[in-house]
Length: 433
Image 1 (spheres, rainbow, N blue to C red):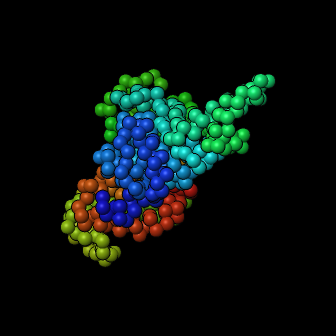
Image 2: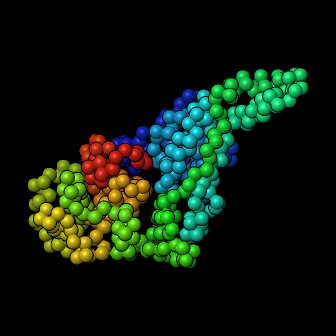
Image 3: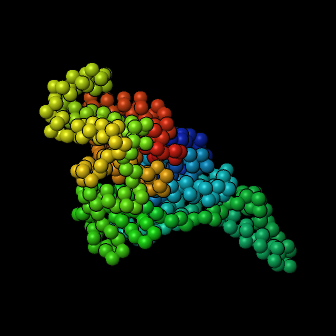
């Protein structure tokens, strides 16, 4: 992982926390969670407040996510809204955090001047034991507290202000008036500063969960579709009358569901040719084949001449493996007919030729699923499925790791937005780091 960290391919764009008062507030949140305080004078955090340095110090990467549900968060500054989420069990954690910031912008800005917000994204289950537990999560509630009790003080002051305005004798209560002055010194004028967040419940729509090897849950108007390993606990046993289950190995049914539900963009020359998507995948397939069958090859400095020579020498291997010739044929078919006849394509290869419909709300989730089904394309996997990418990276040879880092650095990291727009048709939205 050292190479990934040095090249900002993991834990990139985090916020450094090194001001003593912010460290102290973070420690109060840790104590509230029942965790030891950090002894670090400086550490980095993501949007949720997760810190890789503190995780290492505690020896617990799940310190803000102990049971894989009810994610904890620590907000020290409004700047966290623009950070990635680098450690999560749910694909929509970043989206929920964005909704919280957006719905409570004034409160977050006001409170974090003097305090820190912390708490949990509460779900209706305390532990996930099967698919049914995941299906039960249709909304979440943010349980919010503050390190310096600013929220409690603001609530108390609001009550005293209301009493002063409604009671004819309250102005004679010197103890109450003194308490109001004392609270106001800490909270400021609560009539001008909204200190208490008021939007705390958010819908839990389609998402991926990092349980049982990965579970994709797609919610439509009348149905819910679960895509995961058929051996996951509760598969086809949880609400079978209202939930459709698809084994993650059943590429034919996955293709049918995604295409019929309007989530899948089928291969057409209008987007395939300007994007270079098939060419990209063909390059990825050859590099992956070299990395798996000839790990001693140094691809970092390989040029087209080297690759063509290797391909000529290993033509039989390439033909047997089949992915590269398949993609080359698809390139030719699109160029000559403007499309690919999907009915004639093997079920396990159709999804290699597709991407998510760019303007569909589930575009990132669908692309994550497609990336998992085409693991040879490490670039697409890094963009949409970082957890899967990091797992695969651990199994790469040292020379292939060097190649992976080099390719990501010279293509994707060079201009993320432009790369996503060209290859996947996506505009905006910052992915997890």
